Every structure is written in structure tokens, then in C-alpha cells.
Amino acid sequence: MNPFTYERAADGAAAIRLVSDNRQAKYLGGGTNLVDLMREQVERPKLLVDVTALSREIEAREDGSVLIGAGATNTAVAADRTVRERFPLLSRAILAGASGQIRNMATVAGNILQRTRCTYFYDEAARCNKREPGAGCDAIDGVNRIHAILGASPSCVATHPSDMCVALAALDAVVHVQGPGGDRTVKLVDLHRLPGGRPDIETVLDAQDLITGVELPALGFAWRATYRKVRDRASYAFALVSVAAMVDVQGGTIRDVRLALGGVAHKPWRAWKAEEALRGRLATRESFAQAAEAELADAAGLRDNAFKIELAKRCIVATLGDLIGETA
Amino acid sequence: MHYIINAQPMDVIADPRTSLLDMLRDNLGLMGTKKGCNQGACGACTVLVDGERINACLALAVQYEGREITTVEGLSGGSDALHPLQSAFIEHDGFQCGYCTPGQLCSAIGMLGKIERGVPSAVTADLSAETMALDHDELRERMSGNLCRCGAYNGIAEAITKVHAKVPA
Ligand SMILES: Cc1cc2nc3c(=O)[nH]c(=O)nc-3n(C[C@H](O)[C@H](O)[C@H](O)COP(=O)(O)OP(=O)(O)OC[C@H]3O[C@@H](n4cnc5c(N)ncnc54)[C@H](O)[C@@H]3O)c2cc1C
Ligand code: SF4
Ligand code: FES
Ligand code: FES
Image 1 (cartoon, chains in turn blue, green):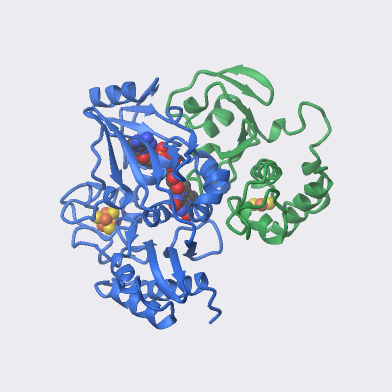
Image 2 (spheres, protein in one colour):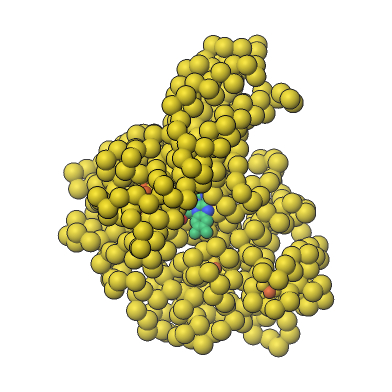
């Protein structure tokens, strides 16, 4: 690990000043991703600015929305009474990830900005455009079982590994950001980028931008929601494919639907095409299958991960089936 | 840096790069906490911070300054007797080589605290429930962050179940 200094920021403005003054500074959440990457020499910050104490509250607002502080731990969010009542989908997705120990350490902001688990990204001896722009990508023709089937580029086929973010994408979550120029909000679905020619640029945020919270807009009462995660072992593994689904079904017809996929792309993948194909349709297996086909129409498989295309389709159909109480 | 470690105030001088795990083992000679993977994947390094379990290998010691840390050495609370969970591990063959055991013990104690406080897990059917039960599936899901290369899982699960049953609700 490179030598670095450690500072606890007194408030958001102080944190931003510290990171703005040092080009090699990084914010520190629970460290569960960053410390690992520093040990592997993938990240080499000279200054860590600990921001975990700045905003930890989970604020249940009267209008039905909830504002979660960026420093709240994953455990605290999943266990929060209001989150469990109003947004059980979020609790489910968080609890499906990592382990009890890691969820106790990991923060909301750190989870959002965690980096890919592509093994070549971690391996200094491998070529990786994300680590070193222009170096090439050893995953495209390598071991790529955990890699992307949607939205990938010839530069990078990595996936975003978060479970929590898949639920946030379906819930229309809004990320609160404080920057040198003031405060702003970014929708979670717009926060992460597709790799294109610059897989090293993963989000629309600048290095100085501090995530201060995540807002979950109020939902109506009619939504049924669930999170399904498929992985190589029953617990404590990253998703091969995951689905966050919400439906509002009235009299057998899908009035509204929100669908997001994890483990398939460089960002939490909101399934807009499937949603469009479902809205106003009868809630049947045929509709679900057609919607899944529509979403995965542009999917492309690599040597080891082509199975995920069919897996994603089946997951969509099965998850929606579960939600309408179908027992096929 | 100042800590309360196993109920003792302690001052430690360590580089910011030092993990909580290395600080405990190398700076303080508390060798009970083990290093398995050093990347969050095995749970051998599990300790309790203010009663919550974490992986000490991914924790920068400096970030935990001022906190109360409990390691396997502190479970008995300074007495010569074993913690009831330690006795149960012996009684139910909850280990073979013992390498994962300190982490299993700390993890289980943190986990039982979560059950007591009604925190759900991935297999909890009803998220709105006020109280949590510790059945077969719940125990295995909640302890999935602790691997045992010897496969002593049955004994570990039995020991935890026994101790949980004895704790007054
Ligand atoms: C063994 C293992 C298994 C795992 N399994 C899963 C899994 O199944 N599912 C899953 O979803 N995740 C899993 N994870 C990943 C885990 O969820 C992440 O490591 C964690 O959420 C990161 O949060 P953190 O607070 O520790 O982030 P850190 O490591 O502290 O930081 C991550 C990044 O976020 C930045 N950052 C932190 N806070 C802020 C802020 N406020 N503003 C701006 N930038 C900030 C940091 O600079 C850094 O770049 C696993 C991790 C491990 C080690
Ligand atoms: S897939 Fe992306 S992260 Fe993985 S080696 Fe290629 S460029 Fe790097
Ligand atoms: S040594 Fe910390 S989890 Fe394996
Ligand atoms: S007893 Fe040997 S690793 Fe668990």
C-alpha cells in the first residue's frame, strides 16, 4: 500500500476543500472496497478523507419519501423500520449482498461508488483499460463469466457489482451531491456511465463531488416489489444476474411497472424497454416473456457469459410471475 | 491512537496503512484474531466494534480510533471462565483446526445481538416482523460471512443454536 495521510472531515465543505487541495485525495467510506484496492495497488491515494460521520441519519419524511445519509451503513438502512415498511425492496437488495460483517462497515455512498470485481482490474499484471486507459482489456478474450451482456464496449466489458443500486434504480432514487460549486441532485440511473471509450470514467461525478445522501421518492400503495438474485452459491457471492421488480397490477392489467437488472452491465441497468413493453398489457407469462425478449434483444455474450442472456430473461419472467402470485 | 480493547484502554502508535487486524496482531500481540484471506471473504478476522461484527482485515485501524474493540481474547470479560458460546463450541465440536473459530465466535455474538434487536436477513420472510427467530435457514444465512475450511459447520450451528436458546428473550 502507498503511504497516505488520514483526515476526518468536520463537515461537507471541509471534506471538499481537503479533496480539492490534493489531486490524489479520495473520500473514505467503510473502506471495504477502497482498502482492498489500495492493498492491490489499483488505487494509490495520498490522502484519505473520512466522510462516514458526516451524514448518517435516515429521515422519514411526511410526504412518504425517505432521505438516507450517505454515511449510513448498509446494515442500518436495511434494518431501518421506515425503509422496511415503505421500501422493502431496498432492504431485500441490501441483505442479498456481501456478509453481515461487510454490511456493518459499508456505507451507502461507498456502495454506490464501489468498483467492478473484474479480476483483471484487480490484477496489476493484466491489461485493463479501466486501470490504465489505452492498455487494452484482457477480459474480452479471457475468463469473463461475471462480465457484461448489455451496454459493453470494445474497451471494457466489466459489470457494476452492487445489489443495493439495482433496487435504487428501480425505486427512482435521487442522489444528493455536494460539490465545490454547490449542491445538486443526480438520478441514480444517470449517475453511472456506460464504458464507451473511457471505462476509467465510471460516473458523472467529479473527484471532488461528495455524495451526501440518497432520496427515495414516495410510492403509491399499489406496488408489489421484490428482489431476486442468482449467484454461484446460496449466500455471500456477487450476482450473476439479479432483478429488482415492482408492479402495479389492477384487474389483471399491468398499470405500471419498474424493472432493473444487476450483474449484466457497467451500471445498474434500468430495463426501460421491458417496462414499455409491459405497461397496459395483461399480466401474463406471455407478456413477461415478450418484455424480457425486448430488453435482451441487444444483449451480446462473450466466451463464458452468454448463458447470462437466457438467465436474465428467465429471471425477469420468474420474478414478475412471483409478484403476481403465479405459481407456474 | 487511543482504543478500548477488551475493556482495557490502550494507546497504539501505528502507520495509517495498518489494518485493525495487523494492529491487533502485530502491534498488540493479540494473536487470537486470525488472518485468512485479508480481503473480506472468509471472516477469520471478525472482531466486535461497539458490539457490531466487522472484518478487521478491511478496516483501517486509524478509522476506528476511540472505539471499543472486542476480540476473542476479551469474550470472557476478563474472567478465567469461558464465554458460554466458547463452552458450547467445545461441547458440540464446533471446530477442528480452530483457525476460523475466533472469527466464528465474534461473528456469532454480533449476529445474536442483531437477532435480539429484530434486524432481518436475506431469508427473513416478513420484513415487518418485530422479532426475529433463529431457525435453520436464518442461522446459516446470517453466518455465511464466516467460512470453515474444516467444514465444522454442523457443530458451529449446534453450538450457536444452543446458546441462543438459553439466552432469555
Ligand atoms: C468479500 C466481499 C463480498 C461482497 N459481496 C457483495 C455483494 O454480494 N453485493 C454487493 O452489492 N456488494 C458486495 N460487496 C461490496 C460491498 O458492498 C462494497 O465494498 C461496499 O458497499 C463499499 O462501501 P464502503 O463504504 O466500504 O466504500 P469504500 O470502500 O469506503 O469506498 C468506495 C468508493 O466510494 C468512494 N466514496 C465513499 N464515500 C463517498 C462519498 N460520500 N462521496 C463520494 N465518494 C465516496 C470512495 O472514495 C471509494 O472510491 C462485497 C465486498 C466484499 C469485500
Ligand atoms: S473488462 Fe474493464 S475492468 Fe475488466 S479488464 Fe477489461 S477494461 Fe479492465
Ligand atoms: S481475513 Fe478478513 S475476511 Fe478473511
Ligand atoms: S475449524 Fe478449521 S477452519 Fe474452521
